Image 1: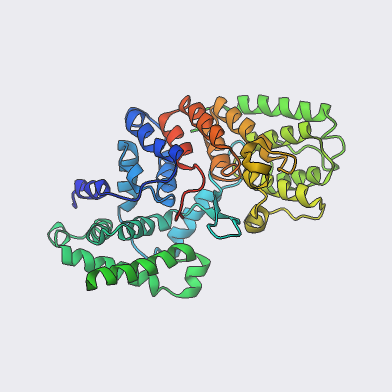
Image 2: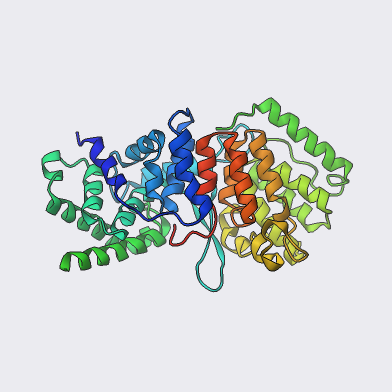
Length: 214
Length: 196
């Protein structure tokens, strides 16, 4: 079994700091109070997804709860996911209304950074969180760490996983696989990766190749 | 997660519906007040009908509360639609969470964007009426330990509607629920770059 600690060590690497004074409090709050809490798995998973979507991977390391949820997220991940798995996951999120129904999340309001300042809705989608984590690690320059994350998720044998060159190869294969996924299935969400995240994966692959060429 | 029992929810709901009826809200809706736990489309229809009518601020707040505590999934979409419909004063705005997301959210949820002088959730004369209720709704949801409901609001329509001072107040209020809830609320503070 690939050691969990390896994955957690990756999270200690310097990552992009969440912008804004209020957001910076999130880490502090989790460090001081998050360890002693007993909250439902659904809420922890939601918090992890929010952290990943806000490019705040470092927040996840602040609490044992979120660390565990993140590690669980990586367990047995693959790409593309089987369509039946994706459909099931999406169904879990969109469940109907009424007081008896499990409370779910519709999505996140996100403001574009352009001059228009338009707001769009990003639906929750668990299937793309692993790719988001990998991309964020590449974006901060930790190509080997991102590769190790891929091998952790694909349950590569520890002997092979300890090799940096193997990590990089695994990372490139992972990003290439997303890039080469059929456009139609990506657009319809069959592969579990949205167009936006897929675009970030393509940019990460280019950045990765540039870093390796130096 | 959500600590309120169905009985408590029902009680809260009844209070809101009673208040809404006393304000004349439910009598003229044409569709009547939907029953608790009804299909989301029925709820959307009700909200649209109410939104098409010239409702007062008090009734608007009650309507928003009613939807919030009723159906946490449908709620943000209903309020997006309601806000947009109010702005355009159009009775023909179609409901439907799966299709309306992009257009309905187009600027209409931004209390900060609309309020003059960066007043944020203070909502000046040109600001959204609904945006003025976000802080009230968020505080009430947290007070009732409806954590998921509060987080749906926070990650959705209320994300950009609060002033910086209100952001701090909200985190403080969320700490009463749990550190993780407060962290979640803080993490969703607006205007981060390069996300999603």
